[in-house]
Image (cartoon, rainbow, N blue to C red; front, top):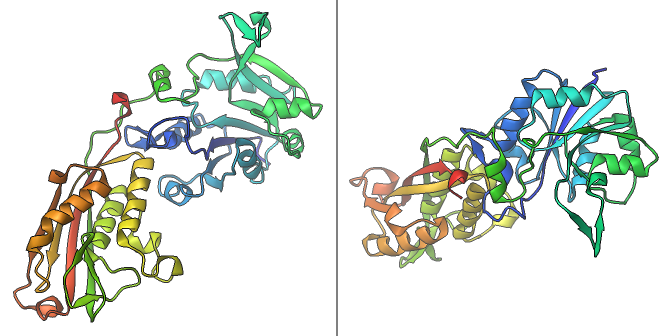
Length: 373
């Protein structure tokens, strides 16, 4: 049986971060923060297994980045930890938050050196300011700012968490359950990212890469008689509509695939399966809005998009401006960064015969630059 497992908690929604991007998806060069922290700690070779808790909306995408053990988190830190502990088979477990990004190997060594001294080893920082609780000044020398990572005996921690009481750290749960803890002096550099301004206090983080990420999307839909035709988010006057599970907006579908391609998030069929009743007849603008929200949550910024619509009919020249306006609003970019082109196939193929429409879309993304926030 291995001796030490690392649990990294990354299932939060970053509700206090005050930005569209989740803090665990801030890019450090090309790596999202959660991967940067996990890779850095893995390089110490101290751990036989690394477990990362993830929000249910993030977990499949996380698996595209690295081969750690991913566990769906819960609605609280403690619930996420309990889920992760089900995957632990080692005598000791080290628990940390992904938001505590700069953990030195020396810091880890000092924690591990104390593993036999108590059920939980807890780093802390001294308090130098005057402390007032309610209306009473208290002795600051008796106050500790508790940090992570914390090292626990696995069985003791598992037993301590068999309660409905919520604790904000492992040591509090263990002590409340009759266990012991030992404090060691922590590190100022192991500051936790809670608010955007905390990033200025994190010395080990590199700026995000300035690379441009490009993706291409392609989609076709055949016509059917009657119904309403939607193309590029705009209602088109036509005697036809599209055969499709959703509203059939072939331009938005191609655009979604381009955005997903640039971000490495798969394709439209994976995200919105055409056998799912939830998407039956759905407005494709809603699908695009969902994708755009994910992109910003996962630390991307949309630079521009370019869409080519191939059709003998309908003629869309009079709709291009409206399409650009609608799509720019959803993409949260200037209208000048949305380009719509129309062409024909010179009467060739099913498009040339007027049986349907084909669309090619290109999208360019960059990483959100948190250094400018």
